Amino acid sequence: MNGAISRGLVVTAGLILLWQAFVWITDVPPFLLPSPGRVAAVLWERGDIIAGHAAVTLSQILGGLLLGACAGVLAALLLAAFAPARRWLLPVLLVSQAIPVFAIAPLLTLWLGFGMASKVAMAAIIIFFPVASAFLDGLRRTDPGWLDLARSMGAARGAILFRLRVPAALPALASGLRVATAVAPIGAVVGEWVGASAGLGFLMLHANARSQADVMFAALAVLAAIALALWFAVDALLRAAIPWSRETFPDEETTP
Amino acid sequence: MHHRAPALDIAIPGLAFDGRQVLGPLRVVLPAGRCTALLGPSGVGKSTLLRLVAGLIAPPDGTRIAAGDGAPLAGRMAWMAQQDLLLPWLRLRENVLLGARLRGQRADVARADALIADVGLAGRERAWPSELSGGMRQRAALARTLMEDRPVVLMDEPFSAVDAPTRHRLQDLAARLLAGRTVLLVTHDPLEAMRLAHKVLVLRGAPATAGEIAVPGAAPPRDTREASVMSAAAALLESLAA
Image 1 (cartoon, rainbow over the protein chains, first blue to last red):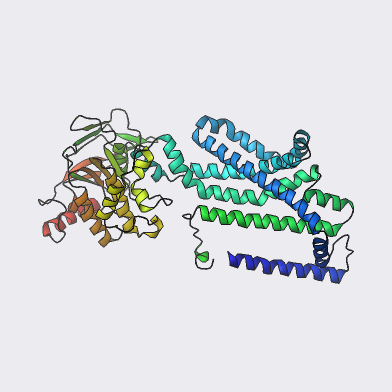
Image 2 (image 1 turned 90 degrees about the horizontal axis):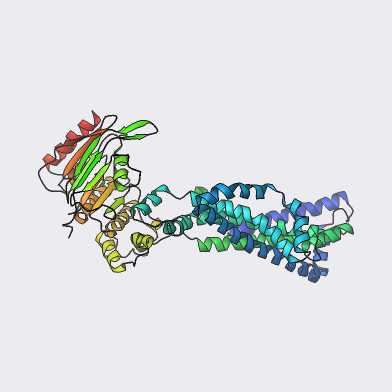
């Protein structure tokens, strides 16, 4: 994973150099595209303000992640355990994903107010689906041989679900959680765009209205850093939690 | 120890899947405390018959599976498959204890460790399945099957996924540890049948019916260096290939 981080840093540094070169060559005005240096200066000068907004957004993302992941896990368990629940609720699950979150963002703000609650709800809604669908998929793909073995041993239905299907589905759940972590910031930021008084999305909207492109880029950089850090943290946690789940890309076995 | 291993009398009026007749009317008797091998070309329905006896597929109307002692069979059968079916998230000892875990019973760790030692895996109780070789995994599966301590054991090509010398050792081990139980062994290896079985049945035809083949006189596990064992295996192979 250290290799992945250093490769990522090299690519990022290369992109920043290209960006700086583009600004030098084209001499584009800073209110359209600020140079990386200018963005870094804004980050330094207004760091305390940006950090405050970042803390708000981060806590919304984490809240949404916790709430959405719990709801997704519970929904998948419910659907796996009860066939009628599958027949009646699976279509609802799909419809919930078909509605764009942008469309319900104003409603959530109306119902839950301009504070954190509406953003947490937004992030949770975005996170819910990948977690629920990945976990449910894992739960229904248990090796038939294991199920035969459990039945030949006289296992009860509950034991088959919780001691066989659930552990077997953990790698699938981990995939869902990784996707959820990657999309979680979208929910929080969209919520802030629709109506908020704090957060990186609010800061970006505010800066945009005043043509402060450098502040926008600074907020964007912080948001990207938060998203990346969160993804790596969740990935490391999941790997530690499911050590028996082996990755079997042959070309990645020797070079981590 | 297994004086109470019952004989099994299996009568099936025939079995169809999707309108295709898989098994013809069959009557198979497994003698009490003996190993019965079931052979036949692949796709003939050997595994289907075994899964039917194991209760893993719904028996067709008119099926009768009766124990010689008249008592119900539920809870008296263990099943072992071609794949080891070890759960990757459990260590070896926990895999051997799986039955008790799944039934919510108290786990007899001492007995599990004794069986692990019996199959030659002492010291590996805390190993993950992924750390074990194919032969070791199959021995672990055998220990898990024995842990169930059922008088009737149904084995579906249990040693076909390992190399020949490993298979040979596993057969000796199984013959020793399963002695006295009523065993139904589905296999496609004529030598395995002639080494381990007291009775050899061959399924053939479509829909399949069972025929019995004579076995050498010695008690299993038979010595493969015996000419009578090798020639019986060779004759069985020729008849299967015919």
